[in-house]
Image 1 (tube, rainbow, N blue to C red):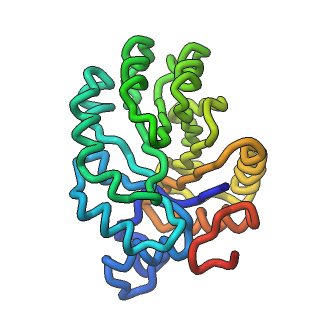
Image 2 (image 1 turned 90 degrees about the vertical axis):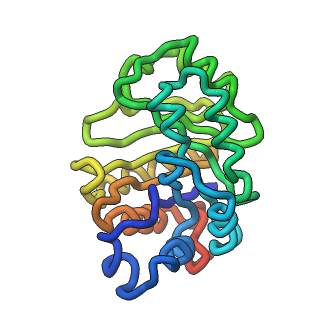
Length: 250
């Protein structure tokens, strides 16, 4: 299974470029979900959502659509993975499971200022619920070590493969049964479109990973309308293995 989508869906620059002009904002998620197979929910990073939000997202998207949920910054940036039990409980009790079968991986993104600490990372991973998938994106080079990879493998957590324009480390290791790729911009962070050559390269890599793993891909070059357009371009390269959006040929 290959699923390709975007990091978020509510962006003013997408309107009239990707979203049809005049499309009501409440219709943007259903529109995206008709063309792509997954999306990252970014708002959960900044604060909790209500159970009714998750319930509504579940009901307005087609069967088979999947949401990746970004874990709260309280855990990753404020507490910096320390004492995670209470904020983790609050997060998972906020309604995440209202997504039901549309709940995909939970993304845990650490700040660039957080260095690797075995005890802290191990304690955090130990406290993650085991009934759902988790992926971890790290942004400091001290995480580039076998000990960290072994911890992820032990706990069945995916190491996020992050593509950024030479800003953060791009670590690669198979640690569980799925791969998680975040594409932050080809040449300019959050802004630039991916060239045909770059998409061809990533398509080849995704095909290789898919021989042994499910693959989730999210475009984070969201400051213009490049993210959804690039997602569709990559998905086209990967058919028929790529899970299509509801309105796309199957």
